[in-house]
Length: 318
Image 1 (cartoon, rainbow, N blue to C red):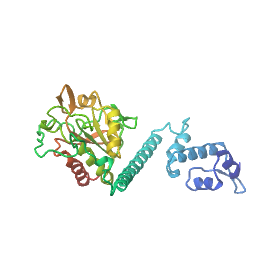
Image 2 (image 1 turned 30 degrees about the vertical axis):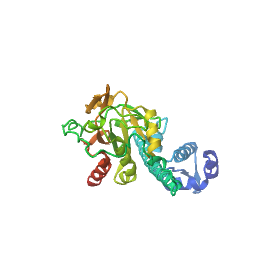
Image 3 (image 1 turned 30 degrees about the horizontal axis):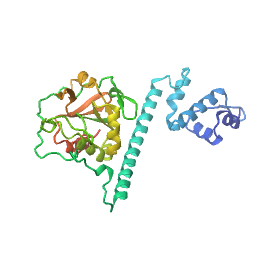
Image 4 (image 1 turned 90 degrees about the horizontal axis):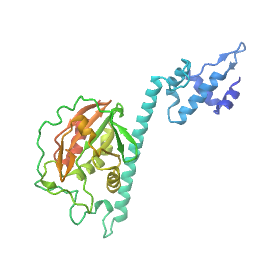
């Protein structure tokens, strides 16, 4: 068939067909008179390229899928190289989403500040509760002990445990990809109008989850630029509770929920008990390619921890 017929059947332009041919993605037969002669296999390849391109995979990176078809596989994504290309595209898309989410959060913050400028009322995220300002840490906050409870973590494989995030998706720590993922783990965040457990301020390492979270929010773009592919907060609070935190604090990243502390039991993470609750002790994991690359523990002061992680990323580039 001629190029115009191929383009019609594959629902692309003749210009696109010529481009695919220039990349060597399709190689039509040459007739004796020098004209190109396309067949049904070429139609299938062009359709595959078009479909993948619509999913966001650049035309130049569709070759693994076409090679898979050429190898006789019934589907273009039946081969390991095709799956690897899927993963790369997903990682790149996730980075773009996170960067756009960070920009959106900044715009929301600027909007709130501008809307309340010159007004007697404060912007929503700046309003403190009458009972307690969770963003301010007591001057006599006790520091946690360096007990070595996380020394075994670096080099450990991330478990195949699905955790629900605030976007309603299951996230597996062993499938986060080759880029570094920062997971800061904390006991619990306070909520306006809700009392913290008795004696919370006197428990070493307990107080400060909201300032820590705000630190990761404020340094989110810096962390991405320093090599982090994703940032997650993680606690045993349920997803509904964490969704309120994401909205109230204007977080540009999702939170993970582990209400039964299965991650603590699997990895041997340090925990403590208060008011009949078992909670995570504060620590942060750097996960890359399914392995825990680094662990921060103990963490103090919590409101400076995001900067500590940022410094580590910059000091240990890939």
